[in-house]
Image (cartoon, rainbow, N blue to C red; front, top):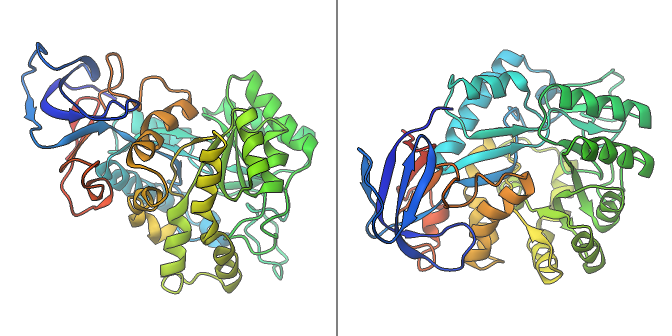
Length: 400
């Protein structure tokens, strides 16, 4: 990914961590932030005057699905990969234009897509992927409805893997092919039709084996987990990132904090399915499951915050719902103060990803920035209203 040279002047800067905005200029050279200061910052050939606007780090979506070309089921998993890849290009490009300069693809992605992005064949955020999520037979990643007598081993987003030795082999294969982390399905889900949403999935031995392999590789495990039981089952067996977590309780949140686990809420997925379920032909079983977790998502953030859990941000939008991505920020602002949400979108997600070079505006960090149309502390809609103009900068280059 090539880098550009740019100076942004007169900006109200949120650095990704510090509460408050400060007036500063930011100089990017060769794609990296070289100077941040109130005065004396050198000028690049290209200068953007940000007077009256806020400058924040490029945002991070830690629960993205590039290959989610449909809402779920066998249709999602068996579409031609050529179509799925082209659809992924459009999804990634749209995310970048919204200001998400880094995404973590949890359930999907592969080295071919990552390679194409690195070579500049498509406009896309910085791209970290897990490859297909690991699911037990009949688990959240098993796309078969109960009446279907068909075989399914793996698709674009999920692979069915049962047993300790088999999951170890699957983890090793993912790291061989460039995975950033490992995703497992550790509870039932909304889209899947055969699994109760609260019941923990995978045995303790299987979860621990996945975590052991990932930890020895210097990586970590992200677990799809809704219920308190599934969350406890996950973190006590080595999982670091809890995805969704809507049915969290205080005891599970305390355990997460003790194990230094992160919560990645995905509020917009349930809100969008609730409003647009009929339009996207959401199955009645999925509608009922969605109703169970919809109202609980914001309360889970409150519980996690009270217990000291680090809270990130994710979208988890499938198929045509991808255009709702920014509204996830709006929903998180309903429950968290603006600077907590800004940190979730930037430095907290960067910490989760183990990336010190993104999520902050500081010397040595990547030149990934978003210039907003106003002050988010006075007008939070500048963060989530797609009708409001924004300038997205990736590696010092302004995105078209």
